[in-house]
Length: 112
Image 1 (cartoon, rainbow, N blue to C red):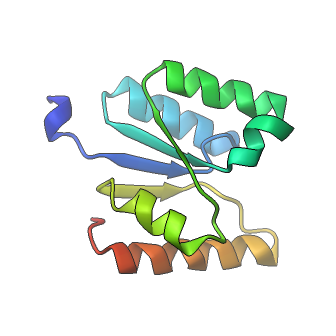
Image 2: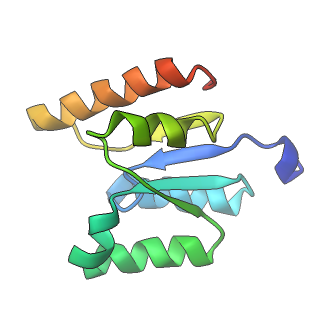
Image 3: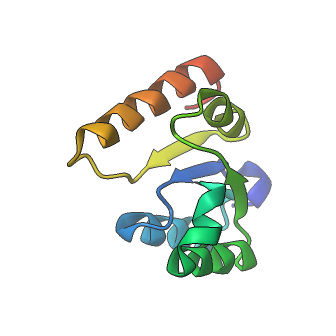
């Protein structure tokens, strides 16, 4: 399938355990792949910064945003067709972040 016909995918949590595999698979299958990362992650976590660089070098588009910044979420989601969140749900703040993602998806109105 041509890349132009493949869904544009946004992966939230791309530097985590599951997110790495999902991002690698999306890129390998030729999907236009976007990853949402906090800009501060690049400067504060060298391991995750390397993962982000590797994904960028492999063809992923890096978008900077924050799960608590509604506008950055909506802006990122408007660029894609499909959103995957691979964040955990063990902590209450992670659940709140998932709710923020759903709210942004509803506002963007373009996700399948």
